[in-house]
Image 1 (cartoon, rainbow, N blue to C red):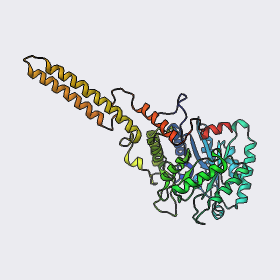
Image 2: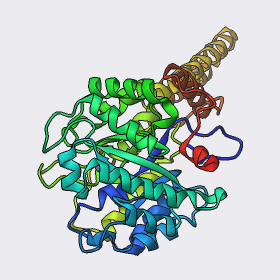
Image 3: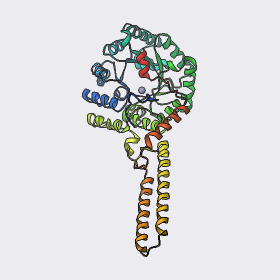
Image 4: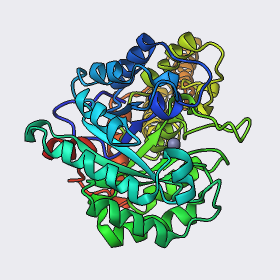
Length: 418
Ligand code: ZN
């Protein structure tokens, strides 16, 4: 995988790293500000183009977010990065806009009981807070105007109220969009959604408001359904996915459960499917060292990190393309070797030992190349151009199969127009 360049089409998929906000806010450890900055810079260098860097909440409530303004200001200096900040109310929204956030995400729970517990407001009060942030945003210069997105928390179920009817999600989405939000994103706050439910809800949201008004997806892996839900969302046309490095987050009421879907695992899945995220997985995995260094007592999750990239990269469709190329190379060697051997054996000289020796040597060379060609861990190729071209072809195939249009507008593009 290579870093995005001006000559390459923008990635079909947007990965939003929400670890610095959603991942850290619940942990006992506090990641030092310098580590947060290193993480954000390293993630951006790995190809992550949107990061939710913090939450503008009182430091007395979430001490780990006391440096929100400093972290936001730092993130906005990184070229090409869309800096998102969470704000539960107008006061937080004002601070986020003042710090220069490109996007402000405001959470409003579909479940009224959860909204009261989480942000201590009724729906009407939260919508009122949204309107105030929209007014503040509208007062910004047009060239640097921030986006405002609503995270529709508990859209798939609530820890207090239980089931959440889909019509309630649609009703709240309509109110938020009418109040001036640019987009809404349904969030599986407690990780209770299932793939069929995900497809159903997105199809209804798309039908009611159009794809351009639905921001992306936000899944937690509390019950191990995170990637399955992300795949379901992908299949109905969602192209933006929130995720946390090392699956950070956890839940105090579900011991052992991980938090958001793990960024590395999600990127691996999508890339192996032939879709482009624009993210360099080796660089992304290296970001975990920053977390380990800054929070040595926190457990880092993630399947890919456990098994290691060297033993896994190149599976799926890319491996199939490599296999075809290697197979062709091996066949070429076999043919070449056979012709030479026939020529040598046909020469009538008394030095039969030399002939047999030469044929044997050629046979050995052929065998060595065949073994190298069959080794899935190497990048051997006679033609020297197998993997990137083949992977790009695969990406186009898969993108078209998932209905991802060539002119798909990324969040970054949308931000540029807002
Ligand atoms: Zn979350």
